[in-house]
Image (cartoon, rainbow, N blue to C red; front, side):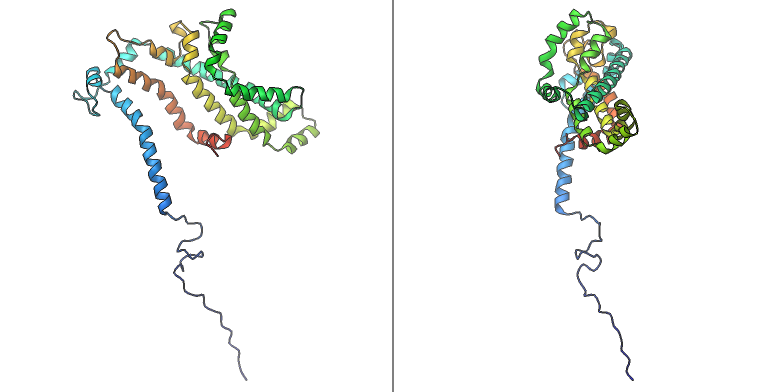
Length: 303
């Protein structure tokens, strides 16, 4: 009587016994190779190159005017001081200008997103006469530099008596063809079957847009809102031309009125720039995830 012994073959020993892929790494584990090290090194160099001017602006704003004009050193001879900020805050109406900037930027953002979303949905879903012509016109408007329209817009503001008014300050900044194009491209990706099912249930076109399309478009709407807000906040040329009343000036325009009779004041100029950029820095810190996601969604990152 014989007994059969069943044996299982042993796995061959390999140098990558710790992993299943023969490379010595566990599945899903990222290898920190030379390529990634080089990529990180390049990113660090680019980040430093981008941050250096900003750091120099902060250092200059904390110098006295004597040190800012006579020395290029990072550490001033007379020490750091907040004198430039005190001077700017004393000579300019910073709180009022900040309120004006916030008010105009928020209103411009709300109107631009509302009108842009409606126009983009019409271009994406509705079939009407002249649709292709309107689409081409929007793309062409993106190519036209906004500076070309400054003189016609100013003559319109004079004709409608909207110079030195919030209406004249806000309305010309509401039209944003690029945002309409971005939203239309995003709406093209929304499954049309969801809208057709709602239409079968008796929902109107506006109801479908409000209850189905907009909730699915929250990431792109947030990204567009941030882009428009930043653009409206930084806009200098149009508010500078259409507003002469200091009580209506936005922060970038108002800070330019804070000038000294002793020539260029480098520390004060840098302090003004930091004060104007500070709200946008705060916005970015709070909404950086939406900004990055918006760039990747709209294809503005080169993907």
